[in-house]
Length: 325
Image (cartoon, rainbow, N blue to C red; front, side, top):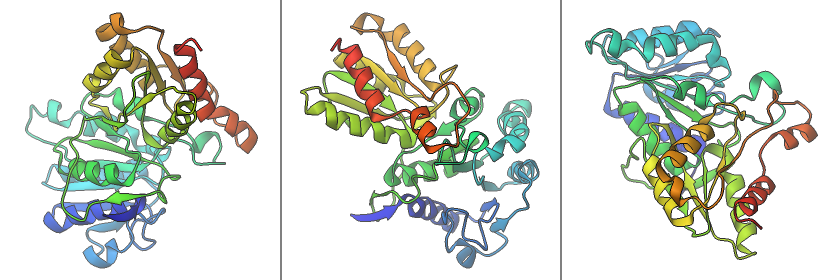
């Protein structure tokens, strides 16, 4: 099996779907002439031309509205945000139009659109460029929210997102675009709403998603040297959420730690905690632990940023806490 970078997997998914369906087009800042801010659309302008790979002005509200409107005439746009921090400028279009068109039109209109781009922190980008909005979008009925953590999942899930008849928020990471992983040559998709057990274990369940899951893998290796066996679940899709996979794992391990790169108040971890305690309370042998960023805006200082972000040491400590060690 060949090895691709995350950005190459994203590009391949978009290109394969665009070859099959002329109603699909890509638009966003620097996606065409510059090959994408993170080179995730490299070569696509040359193949598909300026009518299907479209550079936009720095006007997120405007081009989000144009893309949503185009779905009503039979198109299936992909909108790239240079960062989801910039999506806040266009969030009215996403929340009040894309997510609600199907219901408000009595089913007369679908909104098959993908909004994609990086989320979360990416080094020294400071307070206004380091935010995770997965829980914001997941709080909106009508939106599906996907956060892949590796090239294989990214390609399979993006193809599914492009084919979906509902609006999908597809969240990546600047710090993952260079990550490499095995990706099949042939056609494949991954169903939206299905979590994946990345590492099987018996002592504790660790649930995470996106780039921060790497800290869970590091922690699992450290803990294995002490005889502690972690099961790691990659959520992959935040909404719809795969409660069943999590619940089944907790019934086996009896302990749960959730790792999420987001502020601690009202986040995805909180929803998982509620679902597990309501559906599997009698299986829990310890209170659920959730690990998040500090409850402050992201700092610019690299020393402070390291303290602000969850780490493998945080996971190790949380696992030992639920194991009473």
